[in-house]
Length: 338
Image (tube, rainbow, N blue to C red; front, side):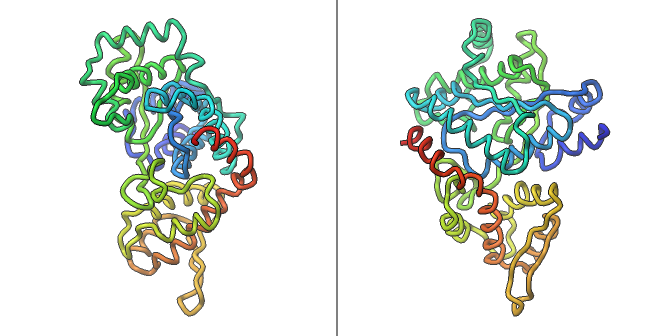
């Protein structure tokens, strides 16, 4: 795959790359660059995680080494109770591996890293203290504002969070950090502050946050806004049927999930998204790209109910692997979240 094709694959479905030229330079200079995504082990992973799993799959296809940081200490800094930290780590490790497997990604090409395995090292901690001497309270609060749950009386832990995330780029030895656009302020904090310690700044790649089924954001804390990975078939159907999806209005979680997850899977596998309808309503519709789905929805040729029924079916197919491992996963959930 040539450099331009690798670049376009990485850029697919992204909202911003800081900077595109730096990314191209990496592709030119390095045969096997490294990218990482970090996820703090807090709320239960949900179907929205497929967005970043598929983007990391793009990085793999573009010749990157991929690291997934399961950030246990960041989870604690963001209010995960210390006594369940290890149990939540085990759940995250299991289900995120299964998300990759469910879309056909070989796990041998992915390195999972537990944050505390290197973040407690003497040199790392020294750099945390060193960065804290020039990173202001205002800068740290601003950087973490869209990621950490601060509340009315912010804890010191939340201010340490962006310092550690910045240093993770250096200590993981990566060329790129990838995450959702909600991470942008922390990414820019890292680009500004790493050079002050004599470390290079990294390329930052961001994808959009997809809307929830109810409301503007898919949230781990709002059951109605998301599809949990352990939801059964009927629960998925019920949630999808209750989702906000107004005729002719494309700003909703159903279409966003189609764009950033289901149609990416279909395109990469050569499959089609089929909307089943009785002949009296025009018969089945078949789509091999998202743009046509959106156009038909805007033109009111595709009814929300038909779209919801077909989307629920596809999501249930995606979650089959989790249901095969239901007993084991429910045991891990009970230990980590009750």
